[in-house]
Image 1: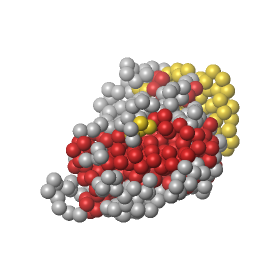
Image 2 (image 1 turned 45 degrees about the vertical axis):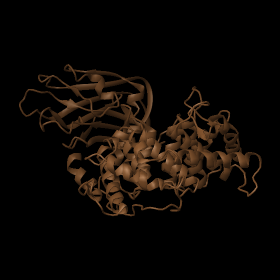
Image 3 (image 1 turned 180 degrees about the horizontal axis):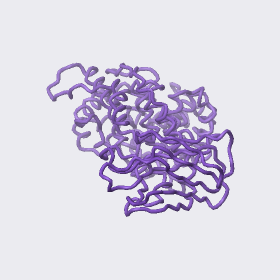
Image 4 (image 1 turned 135 degrees about the vertical axis):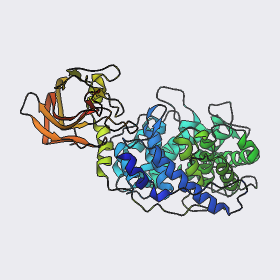
Length: 491
C-alpha cells in the first residue's frame, strides 16, 4: 500500500534532470531544482513509523533535523510527511544535547504558539545541563560541537517567545575564550578546525545579541572580546574557504550548515571578500548524487538535511546576504492517509516494546520467533508453522499495565511477493480471559486491527485467535503476524 502511495507523497517534489557540469543557467534556478530533489529524497527515506533512521535506528535529532529541513525547504506543515514526523516525535523527551536542540529548531519552525510549553520545557532542560558555560554528551567532557547546537536551540526558543536566562549567554561568553586560539576555535581547548570555528563564531554572535552585551564603537571587556573573537573567526574561515579546500575536506555537510548558521547570526554577507554562499552552493550542486541526496557529506539523512538547510539559508531571519534562494513551496499535502500519522504516533506510545511481556505461541519457525511480536520493529514478524491449523498468541505482562488501545498488524514487508505468507483477516482479542472481541484486518501490510477502549484499564494478559486466515499462495507457509501493540493514548 505504501508503495502505491509513495508517488502521491512525492508528487510535489518532482525531480527534473540533474544539471550537467556545463549548465550555464542561473545559480538560483539550479539551487531551486536541487532543493526540490532533496525534498523528494528525504520523503523517500522516511520510514513507515514516521521517523528517519541514523546510526542504525531511530534518533530524535535526526528526525527533527530532517523535518526541519523539509519545512525550511518550503514543505507545508500539513504535508503528510511533516505530520508523520511530528507524530513520531510527539512523546520524545530528549536527553542528548543534539536531540533537544534539533527538536527546538523544529518546534519553533512548525508552530511556536502551538508548541510553546514544550519549547519552554526543552529550553529549561538545556539551561539545566549547561556546565561551566558549555555542553557535552551526558557524563562526557563538554565540547564546542554540542555547545553550538545548544546555543542554536536556545536561540530558536528565544525567537519562539520562550524565556531564556541572559545568564546562560553570559556563562557561555566566559567559556568561549577557552576554545579560541590564533583566530580559530577547537572542539576542545587547544585545537582548531574550520567546523568548530563556525561554531565559535555563531556562539560569540549569539552571546553579543542575548547576553546583555552591547555592540559599541568603543567596546570594552567581554563586549570587545566577543566581537574580536567573532571577527577573527570569520577572517580565519575566509582565508581558507575555497572550492578546492571544500573538495578535500570531511564532514562537509555539517561544516557548511555550520557556516550558514555562523554567517547568518553574524550578518556576514562575505568572508574575506568571498561570497561564501555562492562557493558553497556550487560545491553542493556538484556533489549531489543521482538519486537527489548528499549522503556522502555526512550519511543519510543528515547529509541531505545539511545540504538543504545551507541551500535554503535556513537560519537567516531576513535575506541579508547576496545570492539566490529557493522560493518554491510544496503545496501538495500528500495522500489522505491519516492512518500513517496514527501509526507513527502509536509507535512512540507502544508499551509492549518497553515492557517486553512473555509471549507464548502455538508454533513458530526459525527466523520468525514469537518475540518479534513485541520487539517494537515493524519489519520483524512471527510466523506459525504451516500445519498449525489454529494458531494462537498470548501476551503475559507479569503485572498490571494501564492501557486503552490494542493494535495488531500484518508483517511490514513491502518487497515480499503478495501471498508469500498466510494473513489474518479476522482477529479475536480477549483481555484477561474476558469475552473475545472480533476485529477485522485489512489486507494491506500497513493497516492494522485496532481496539480502542472507552477508558484506560489495568490489563495483564492478552489472548489472540485468528478465526479467518488467508493461506499462503502455495500452501507452504503459515500465518504471519507483525507487531502487537498495547498503548496508552490518554496521556
